[in-house]
Length: 249
Image (cartoon, rainbow, N blue to C red):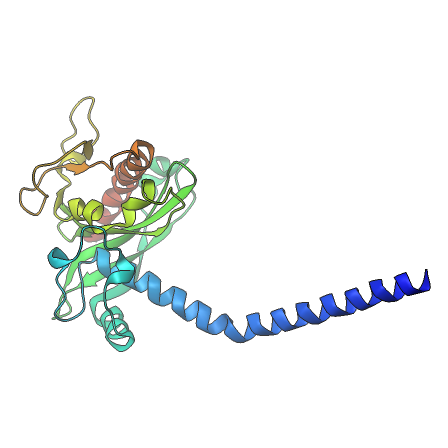
């Protein structure tokens, strides 16, 4: 009995020692982890803003490439963050509060967006955080629309838990490329029985080649594709109204 108690006591001491070591390592690496997370998020935001490192062109990247494949150098990435986008807190008019019921903006009086800047510092686009649901869980995206509120500049995904090789392909260039120059006219001139943005099984041309209000679905991942489409249609319907009021100030 005494030997058993000694063994248990020894195990408890060892466990506590390991816990202390892990806690110490976690605290020591926490700043770096947070920094890496911020840099990865910045890469996604710049991707959606269609901002790439010097000499890199998206059209030459592999169809299955993801944002992490964009060869940013840390110093260049930080410089782009500081010069090409600017955070802004945009007020939500009281007249729109009824439209926010049941949405991610419910009860809020303002929303954070990012203004996209050209090389002269002029606002040319708006970056918006997007929230929706896929097949296996929530999806968080970052979408960018032109400053005239007529076209989508790009999209990337900050969080997703979809099936690798299927729904997770929303993170690949081939899928995201269809959001470049996507026509948002359907939000202003709705058609009966149609959502502002629609989804097709296949598209012969990208929206950069011929701007339309349609994107291409991912083969074998209908629910994920539909989840992203629903997120775009529901989120942008709110953001466009808020930004219209913001521009009229």
